Length: 255
Image (cartoon, rainbow, N blue to C red):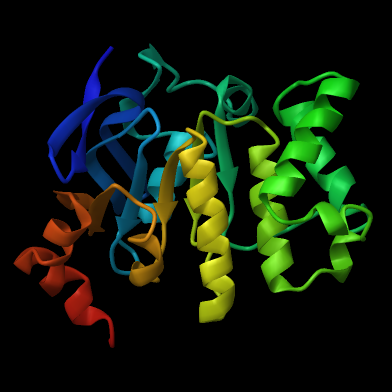
């Protein structure tokens, strides 16, 4: 099995690669969105993805999750080529995703929403699905709201529900797309604590986030993209101090 580096205070530890994109390119007509992107995440590793708007970050997640097909390149999950696999089949194998804008089933309760993930995303039987839901609701701080209708929730709890639905699918790798967007600092801190717990429980995480100070509280490694290419990949402190990254991303923060 291939490996990816995980930065630690003592040096570099090699973790088995769980999910990888090899030479990924994506074109929409004349618009090249990804260009020969190599990306990987190891077992139990948390990787953050940053970059300016239009860098190709969400498109990379779309390709990894299967909602879009790459124009070139391949995707491997546990060393198996899954490039042609549909999103729901990737989910069954262990690739979960939480989206930037939560869209719960509004006519259903919190528990029922999470049960959909456990039953259809993970393919669990009734009793196993309920057990999984109880665990996930506890992890996401939603146990006390299990019988509330999803459309009655505020933004923070909708974000928590979006996370809970994806966790109910029992992912080996969890893809997060700006899940902290729109939250206050205090709310973002609460969400970070939950994601840290998920990471500590062994789930690999790939997290796109514009709120960098939130992101670096969780991730082991940071990848910066610009114009559809990876321009830096390494420990967060090293990447954020890279002159190319500062020029491409941090230097445009106010633009």
